[in-house]
Length: 297
Image (cartoon, rainbow, N blue to C red):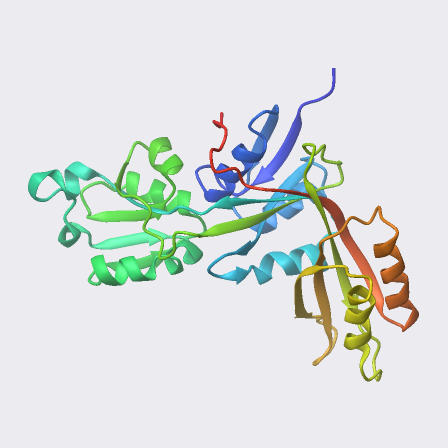
């Protein structure tokens, strides 16, 4: 009998936790909760878990640069899969404590709102319209914000977090879906040294880092041409500093093709031939989000 697999993930009750439960809904995988993304990477890198779940991109906020830098500069962990999950944030508190007329929550009774800085930023319009008077304070995770509210009754505190965290800490969802945009999705990467067995009939993606040769005019054009004339689609290209010297960048490129093809390896060899350095971060399945998501454990 094989050993039970494990995945490092941000704290229980966060969107990351919801996303992991969604991905592994039909598998016996143990979540190992970590306080920070650094701990997630370190837990996987040390071999204490098989995988780690990394939020890498968001519809509203774009790329999560800190997480990208960890993946590139701090660890050498292959990308094993990617999936998207909706980031639905809610206003959470004690309804009885904050109730107004006819049982609805009274904005005037909320003195302070806690959340993760990213979640707070995704709810700016709601906070400006409904709670302009309330003090805002950020914490390392949305679940920690909900826990803090749960531990401090009678102070007029509320949190922005997931419905899962509200249920875990016995609080009420005062108002659901308070994010500024309805199409707020987060893209997650599954990283680790253990292969991930993907569902059938999913598309494949490859992520590479390309560092251009110095003093080579038109190098980026030639790199893109190597993909273009082969009709290889790029879904994302982003420059990030190499951290070696000012003005030195690498290009983080997502490619809509598996490395197990004829065309993509040939394109990479052509790019190397002009003196570019190429590092493959992973060739992996991309799992689409199903609107009717399976029930999580």
